[in-house]
Image (cartoon, rainbow, N blue to C red; front, side, top):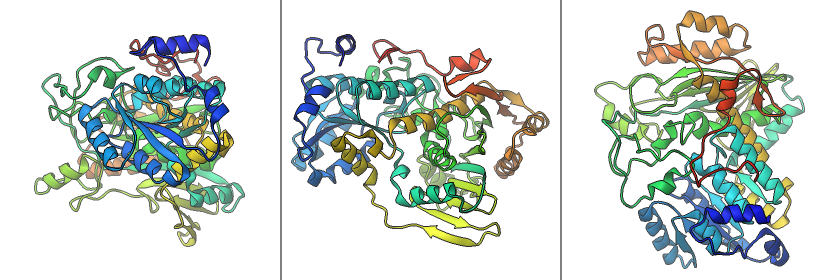
Length: 508
């Protein structure tokens, strides 16, 4: 770590007199392929539990969890108690800066809320750690690129948590499509049809539980009281639906399918043109992000069209609200509701080609069909649940970022496609269907998606003549510099304002 960056890092720490004994240089000098790899896990009230299981399953490979960090003291205490029962020699921290300074670690695994991903990854990289970072890797386009710059500067291994990249079946399907198995790719569609219930309407700022360090929880985001219904403890999970912390289901669940779709297209830059339409409809609550959305990425090879639907395929009626409300909160299906599907997938990817299509209905399978819908080939089974963490650890040992299945550059691009789609939406205005159709004419393949969206909303008693959707501008981008062309308002949303001392630096 350079003296300047090290000094800046220490200024943000609670222990400014500490030294970084476990730097990238010292790690490389002493680390052997057969030695233990000490991992620190940051954030484990949700997805982080999968990280913990993944590393524990790799104990035979020399992987040890040596540090746990969470800003919720109850969550931390519970995890430390579990670690003690399993005989782990791990310490607990509420501030990741202290863990990076005080605990000898080789790698850090990040499963915090989205708004922390980039800064946590950059701090860890600057402290000489390899990093596994959950998706999306950023909360805006600019900071995602900064992780890539840091990874390159400090020669760190940085994996993105898009685990489908470690699916041998999907990788084989991508290879076959690239080889022309079904002819030319016409359109790639990503689908996120996942039930999301209203988070409710609050009557003012909500109280933060005493067990949560809310300053640390907010980090780079504004230090404003939570606006999530449910009182104490409600700051967890529903942060996904606020721009300061999340990116809606496009950046929550949809990032997986966005990444797979881009993988099939074989494009390694942001789209030169993006457009979005949608709204938060069907209920009124405090959340900001759309629950119904279409994003259009116009690549030269073929368009990538993404659809988000948070409402069920049939409306929840008075005789079945309780089950749907309970299960819908986490996006699960219940016996009282169903979700739409398209060509065999609800949460998946459809690759439409001139001689058929491929359906990717989950994280690990791919099914080939001809144009009549007859199944040609099915790639499924034989997948290891821990493959993505195993791949990360293997690359940590080899010191070759090319060994990673989801290297941070891939994670940055797929995350950024979600952000640019949301930028178009956020700059949009309410419009009648007639105005929308006029703009849709120039976008290949979009009318079908829009038509199915209208049908879906009608099933949920949403009339877009009276409940108007938001239509965003068509935005042109220069993918080389990752800036929009001729739209300063859009450029402003490529980056966020940071709250000191939680600042992603211009120079990493």
